[in-house]
Length: 323
Ligand SMILES: [Ca+2]
Ligand SMILES: [Ca+2]
Image (cartoon, rainbow, N blue to C red; front, side, top):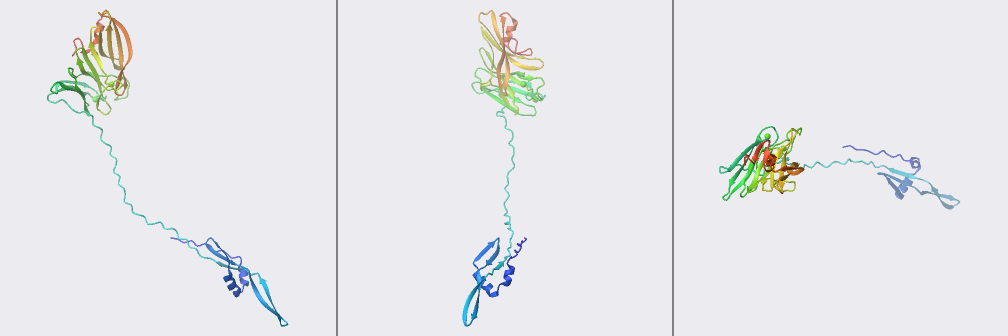
């Protein structure tokens, strides 16, 4: 704590004070009527009074009042002490404890079921679902439900997540993994982004099969490709008298993809063909892209492929195939 004292103002009226009488001073002091206060220093100025004298001449007495200009300045300097404001004592505030933010554990994959002891048509495949160069496992199967079966596709990433996609009861149809494929392989793609996908039968009927494509996302969980409009992407492999549909793998050293095939005839002699490249149009979507149209005579052996599912010379569905 410190103190500060204001300097004393000097009075300009000291000489006048010297000539003022004590009586006048007392009078003036009481007659003071004009006062000013300046910055805490109280300065009082008093003025205007008179000295009275009496002159006696020849018995006559004349009283003359001689005005006296006297200014008495009484300066009262009040020592002003400024006390520094003292900060209020610190208030003790109980510390607020904030619980550290803990990142929630990664969401577990939605489905995790695996084949039970009573599972049917258990079909395993191998592929690299997460693109790390290490083989991972895949399996499809059915669980008898009394009237039929509920069907599942499961991926098991080595050292990672295992997850299951439920297809439900497929009626007269069934589900079966065909193989690992690659719908979007690109040479030179960032490491870990070239991942294998899974091609599977996801339904069947009297005219053939419906194939679905599955993949494993960055979260390690299985997903089924849709058509970009929220509907599951399906490639039919089927045939009738006038039209056939199939799918095959295609691509060179720098790319791999699937091609949807379709051929139809109006006369049974000449067939119009369409090869439609299947493009990955989003994270979980596939769609038919560029179409190459052609024509084949009914006797051409090339026409057989349009009603099959093949990849690299292996026939999954078709003449001499697995199904
Ligand atoms: Ca892997
Ligand atoms: Ca891929």
